Every structure is written in C-alpha cells, then in structure tokens.
Length: 329
Figure 1 (cartoon, rainbow, N blue to C red):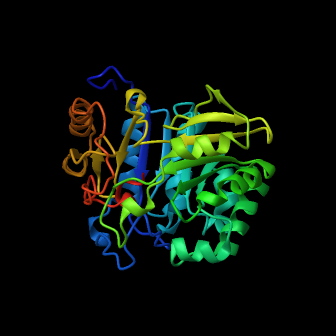
Figure 2 (figure 1 turned 90 degrees about the vertical axis):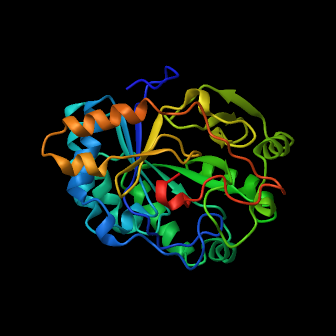
C-alpha cells in the first residue's frame, strides 16, 4: 500500500476497545461515555480486518485501546493473530498498555510471540500516579512490568511530558528505566478530545526538555527505529536509549507509515485529521474480502500529507474532537 506521497503503509494500529480502567487527565474526562458494546467489531471481525491489512503489506500490528487488555477474551484475538508471525507474514505483533493487567497476561503474551510492548507511565511517584490516572494502582503496574520482564518481554516506557507535573522527574525516570533495562520515550501532549483541564497549561515542548537534559547527560542522535514516530538518542551516562515523539515542535509526518483502525471499524489515515473510512460496512457486506480490499485502497489514496496540531492560548479547542482512547494514539 503506497499513499499519495509515496509512503509505504506497513504499520497498522488497532484500537480494540475505547474503554480503559484509568482516566488519565490528559487523555479523557473522568465521566466518560463509551461506545455501546453492540457498535464494536467482534474479535473475529478484528482478526479478519487485520489479516486483510497483513495480506496487503502491513508488517507490524499494534493493539491499543483504551486499554487493550480489558477487552473480554482479548487473548483469543492475540493468539489468533500470532499465526501471521509464525508464517512470516508479520514482523511484529505488539501492544501498548497501561500495565494494569500485565501481571495476569504477561506469560501468555510471550507465548503468543509478543516480544516487545509499550507501557504508559508518567511518574514514579505513587501519589502523583494516582493523581494523573485518577483510578490507577501504581503497585499493580510495577508488578505487571516485573511480570512482563520475567516472561522475557522487552519493555519501552512511554511518558507524556506535562508542565508542572513530571518535568522535574524526567531525569530520574530516565535513570530508573535504563537501570531496569528499559527504553524511555517522551511524548508531547496532543490536542485530542475535550478533557477537564486546559492543555495549554499542560503543554511542555520536548525541545525545551531535551535542552535541559543535555545539561546533565550526553545525548547522541542515533538512527534507531521501532517503526513508530520516535526519534532516539543514546544517553552516554546510562547506556540506554531515549526517544522523543514531537507532534507539535517537530512533526514526524514525512515518514509516516501508519494508519489506525478503531474498534468500530473506522480507519483513520492520520491521527490529527478527521477524515476517515468506514471499513465495517464492506467487511459485513460480503463473506469475501474484495469490497473490503477496495475500501482500504480508496482510504490509503486519501491519506493526507500531515496533521495540523496546535496548542496555544487562542486555540483552546482540541484539534480533533475524538479522544485519544478512540484511535489509540
């Protein structure tokens, strides 16, 4: 699949549910209205859609949410999709998780061929963790990380950089993550969905974070890639890698190889645009995949050059109305 700008689409992110057992303050409102369960694709339909993309050249599948591991019987889908790893059609099957269910599922994930996962963690302070997630249990997440490591799964931590919340904690998070054998990626907060607070107050440009870290650490740009938008540096003092995802200060659109599928079968060709394609209708219209394949091709032909994210005092509304939990980041 080649988009209008010559970019090969080889990476599909699938939000298997919009539900989550956390209510992170930069992601969603505390009193969320989630999709009716009847609107969700079945696990079998998610499998069929994913397989159609694999057959069209996708080499990496990432399951997201919401929190993917709260979807009922999610391991049935993961085990089924793992057949594409065994056949060689897929290079990687992975998930992004808040870690709350990892202790329960880590061993089975490893058995399904999941070798690497992303865990979202914005602070190492249990009280602040409760504040930022509203409903999260820090001890449970730490136990989940240990269980995943014990199962042989490599972990990358994702931390959203938030002004006045964790900016002073980033150096210690970096040292802890690298000391535990984990990469750390910092992410700028993104203007997606209405939340209870003002994102202008949260926004922390990673250009400033990097400048601050450079006074304490030796950061060297490296060409390391995981298939996503992060740009990496090596930290000489720790020997570990630090990634920066910068949708606002330095967008990553020129190399975008990703599309995003929601749990209702809506395909978003860009995280920061509203344009989308309905794949549920062609999926359900026929037992064959010709209609679905044509719909995918038509959608890829509309993939835009880039997003239009902006956060400032004048632009108080989110760039797009849907919450991050709908498309999974």
